[in-house]
Amino acid sequence: MENAMMEENDPLLNTQEMAKLLGVAPATLEVWRVNKRYNLPYIKIGRNVRYRRSAGLKFLDANTKAAA
Image (cartoon, rainbow, N blue to C red; front, top):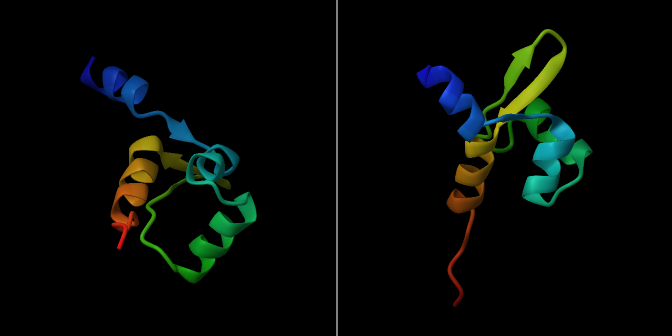
């Protein structure tokens, strides 16, 4: 039951959905995965790549800079 609730609150996003959430092109995420440029965790399911929505939000928080 807990896992079902967690999935509803933290859905898995495909590359296009995560790119939209982060405001980047899907190809940018693909480059980041290959080059390991950023620590943005992802899940491989066969040939499919999925991201937890919470990982995207955490990534945005970690990369938010304060105004000078």
